[in-house]
Image (cartoon, rainbow over all chains, first blue to last red):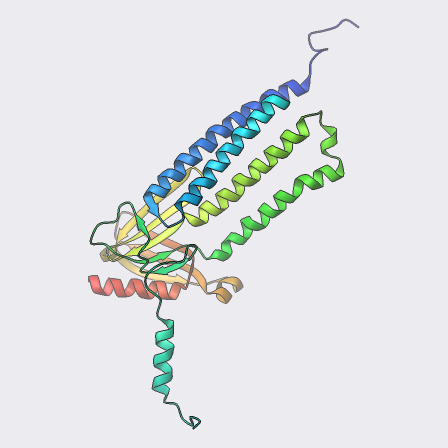
Length: 74
Length: 201
């Protein structure tokens, strides 16, 4: 059988690219969340601001970490 | 000498005093704070005082806490069942990390939705801060003097047992209706609002 352009086609490369795109978009979302939390903590002073900011920052750092791991491991 | 008779008046006074809400510093995750002095919001004016700060009853957090625990327990189950071994090398780790990332986002969203969903009753206004999800919020307010009607309701076995419910405020302002949902002690909230309305009118 003649080799075609699709014979060497690897579905996992497509999945990897899609996963990286999704994780990249998730990073943008995580950044927006930190901005939103900052706006909320500026609007409301409820006595727990530092922990709330830390939670949103931790979420963003975790998203970046997962993106880097996906980039290196896959 | 043992007391044979206690005047009913004394009993009533004690009961009323016991029921009076405490003023001052609010507890960190309190859903009902009367005159909290360490809480403020951006648009608060100098002469304006916060009479009541409300959140949804803490019991509403049980849902997201329960699902977060379930989501955290899923990856070890996937590993035990051998589902992840079907993936090429590297992918199981990324899949687990992504799963935990989504779980963290879900938990944070659940907590923030409760924490930032606050209702304020001040000496001048009623303010409803809605935090719908991680990227949507809305702040609406109405002046006390524009409030036309206040009603409250308690429904369901949990609401009745834990004494939480909804307070519905009809106003003549641009936003015709404000609703405080699943707040503790709705009767007391309505009473405080009525007292404030009586003072203003």
